[in-house]
Image 1 (spheres, rainbow, N blue to C red):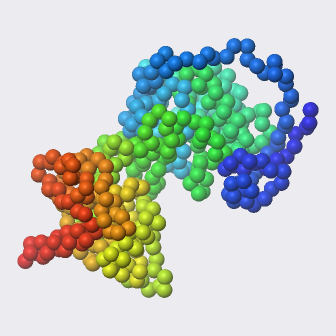
Image 2: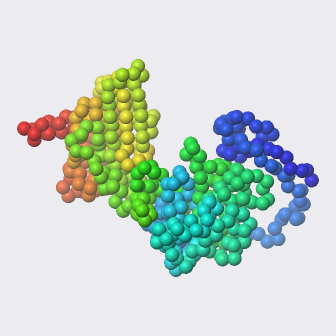
Image 3: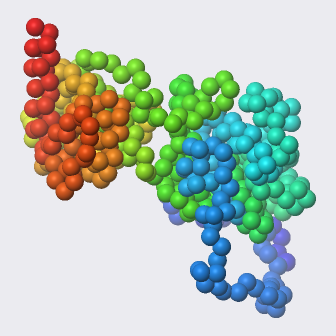
Length: 465
């Protein structure tokens, strides 16, 4: 048998090369090659590797319904993102920035384990004393939670087989080390080997496993890209550490929707669920200030109202500055071009800053109308009426296209207190939303938003007089 040899493995595509280079020749990613030790496996005959008895094929009607056997974690916002709870035999990858609250959320999950399920909490980063201090701060004292501080993969699997828990939490997978792999902890080979072994054991025994993953400075999940393919769900913990709220978003979910989000608020006693994200995101919204506009977006089945702020100032640079936070930069540039072409507004001579209050990330095209309204409001220095909310997708010709779930958006806006709701005419032609007091304003193009702002400014001046 040949001895071990050195190879360079790409952490993005897992391609192997005999020598190092700054750029991966396969996926063209930079600085992703790391040195690993590779040992060729011994050749085996077909008879030695063929199983004596394999699993037989069956029909869907004879399979067990997974929705009826989900493990309810007791944290409503987390269950919403997972699609109703943890599925036995599933693997979930939870990733996020350092200090964002991943370990806090999972420790609170352990606190909900009373008689519902047993948890094995494996920590490779903290000692038992540190874990107990966090548990006491969060009020976690459950007899159904077992704690193991270990980084050796074989020891973790042996203890797992001994206690047979319902849920296993590994914090984090980058700290696990397999003796069969000759490389350092956190390397692509170690992460792939440890994750594969843990997931295989969990699926064989019907145990739900949650793996905590680190992220790189670019915001990507550390380790090989195959890690995201191996698990059943990938959850991303988002939020600014300088702010109190956190958002859990599903990037991948084989057992539910990837559009749902869970909203939490970080406090001294842990993460609290936010049942009304719209009110939280609109708290402290300024009145009679230009450049602020409310929008209702759909996150899965949940309508959420957010505030979009725009600041347009005359530029002193040859090339005006553009900055967008929470909104796709290219989308902002496209809307600026449409407004300048169709309405004649000279945004090309101004610096433009765009922000979604609260750190929420909006990718839905229905926010185009609110972005355009905020930009026009800031440019003309005309405040958007406080009781007005807009939603709609803007095309390159300046038309406002139809959006989905118009009635749900309108009812959520009325519940929060908005009196005028501007929606695309195409969305309300077939079914007019039934509201109590709020008024629906149908818009067909960006010219209508400019007219609404002008009417609002006129009414404000008359009230002041």
